[in-house]
Amino acid sequence: DDVTFGGPVVKKEEERKAKRKRENTEDEGGEGDDVTFGQFRFNKSVAETSADLLEGNRPGSKAKKLKKAISAAEKEKEKLAAVADPEERKKAEMKLKMQKALQKSEGTKVKDNLAKLRKTQNALQKRKEQSQRKWRERKEQARMEGEEKLRQKAENLRKRKEGQKSPKQGPQTDPGAAKKTLKK
Image 1 (cartoon, rainbow, N blue to C red):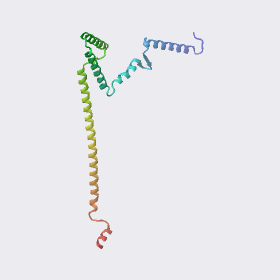
Image 2 (image 1 turned 135 degrees about the vertical axis):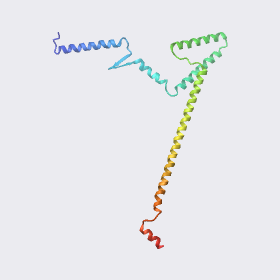
Image 3 (image 1 turned 90 degrees about the vertical axis):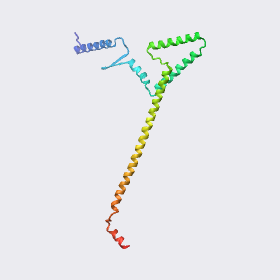
Image 4 (image 1 turned 90 degrees about the horizontal axis):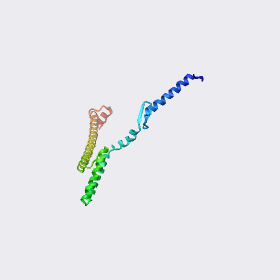
């Protein structure tokens, strides 16, 4: 029906555009978080949270988290101990229990057992000290091996030098040297 120049080609091009538009709206499915590049699909929410996930695995972060959790648990304990009225203390304990229950229901781990936290902290410290000790031993061993190699090299050079001197100490091959000894 198109009378314009290249009519069927223009019609096919419009159909392709319409088809792409339909596919794009179907792919989105109401989710604005997904971005598609070629054959790859990236979810924004995963990309945004990956930085937070990596941040928790930095060296020393576990020790810092433990220290923070221990101080928070101690503060809670001190607050409860500071309340003089038994009625008020029960209310404060109940409020604290409710907060912890809500946190657990949200899926976060509540770390408030001081004994476990301190035990974990001590284990982490022991592991750190053991790693430092092993590193010092490796460093000392490397230094000793280096000294041994230098000593062996010096010994080999000395032996080589002695080996070169011994043939010269035998009969001299210089004809003028024999005459010099006779003249004396």
